[in-house]
Image (tube, rainbow, N blue to C red; front, side, top):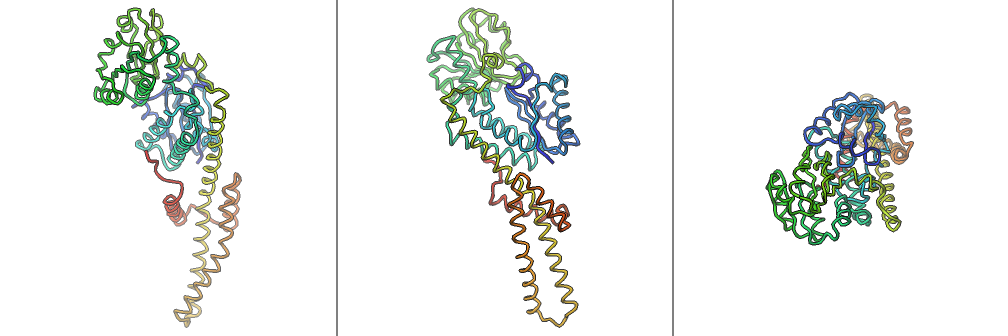
Length: 448
């Protein structure tokens, strides 16, 4: 089995295409199961955000896996394969690890260094776990990626390199409205991006924040956390009439703020709308209204916010994170290669133990007059000799297996000693050894 990533992002595809491919809710669950049901796919996790859709999978064959994922993405988005494949990127094995670590650290985001991607990947993993489509391989990969992302944000100043999409949007708002302090804001939605929007508005000096959401209780909790007030989603048009800034990210999948609604509410007054939803929350037609400015993911991309998003003064922080990613990728791959040789080592020791027991039994049969004490001494001596003979080769093969060509050493060991690490006894012992390693080593459940 091998790791595979197939995806598209703001770097490879226009927002209009991303909008068609993006999946949420029940559609995301169905896509997970449809991909997992393919004969070439053993595990799958999907990261679907406002600027990327990526499928992470464990597959038995490269071409079979790529074909399965591509066909499913095409079928679920209703985008023809020939149109979709032009914008897809594919990573395999080691490159999957490097890519996911880079993504989680915010180095591949529209706004470099943004931290929302950590939560988005965590949610993607949880969904795959709940649906039973993520097994030990993707669990370990994603958990380690989350740790790397936390380390990058803790040990470097990458958070300060590029503002979040909300921060970028407010920068554009100030170009239209002037200083944001003292303005009145309406936040539509109460999810993680909306919460970030409300907090960012508060930090920017906006003291009058209104939160509207389909579930009023969630709107009330968010509004209370920022000292604002909550309203029903049906009250959005009324609140638009007195708002200066509107940020919408509901995940509704349909237009929430229509052109006629804005026309009736704004009546020509300056109004800035930031649409962070995919698909759009705000009808693009509002751009035609006098005094109304709409910024969405597509216009931000066209404005150049899809690049690195940092200047020369931030290059040290980006370089520091890249260094962390490089070191963590090397360590992860080293540990994975070393772990793969464990069943072979256990099979070797199991075979040696069987030989020892067989020979001791034969000795007892041939020389039955040996008393119990002498038999014990002989058995212990034979076992010590075998252990000493196997110690150095097994230590060395574990060390050598961690190198890029480490599989060859394990293969040589299997060939020389005619080992089958997949026999039930060896597999059972390997699983026990893995659990013991996890109890003291790098594996384990992410503390979310």
